Image 1 (tube, rainbow, N blue to C red):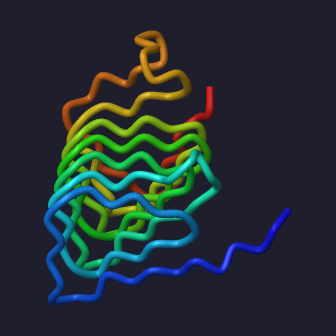
Image 2 (image 1 turned 45 degrees about the vertical axis):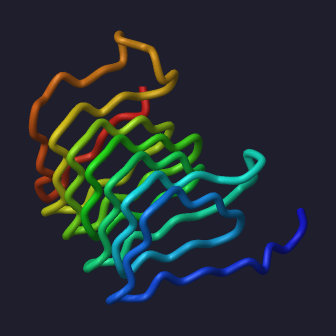
Length: 136
């Protein structure tokens, strides 16, 4: 396994309009109006900080959200929704952690992106203390 030294920060007060294609680690503390995608299907991590905002689709293997996302989230490995996370869209996941206070205003979809059998049809889900989302 090669060490990946690509670290990118979009600091608070910064607004990017357009899609972001990245590899390595990306931390968003500002605003991105566009999709956030991983280059070449690599192993990458996105962190949306508490004041960070993404208005677009996210397609990243590992995602940590503590800010706001308006759009669908697709993760092939791991999604963590921290206490101040607000997702207005569907979350497609393989493994998910939701901390008390996090919100998903959309559906939680396990596994295959088009699998209706694994879909949790809740228009709003707010994690309460002790809640665990089963992996199957």
